[in-house]
Length: 83
Image (cartoon, rainbow, N blue to C red; front, side, top):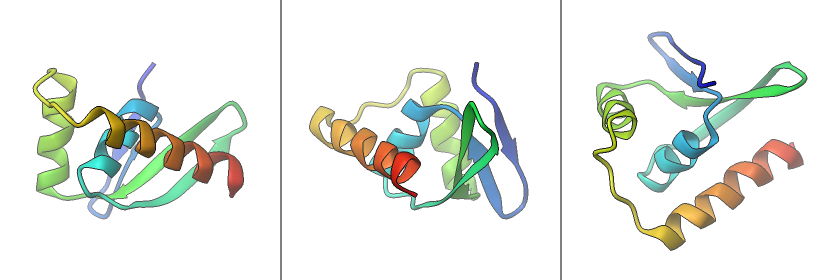
């Protein structure tokens, strides 16, 4: 289940692969919401560019370098479990 929310300032997703993809593509993971003990929300600064990347991710139109993606997964998990 992918839950996302948007405001003028933040984009939040619970989708780990999407969060890692956004990190690879240069978007800074600004925070991790832990409102639910079983799920975390990955927070990014919202922008039109980010929205376009999310749309392209959801429609399968993105290609990223596999090693960079793997490193981003590790980075996001490190933030998730280390903070």
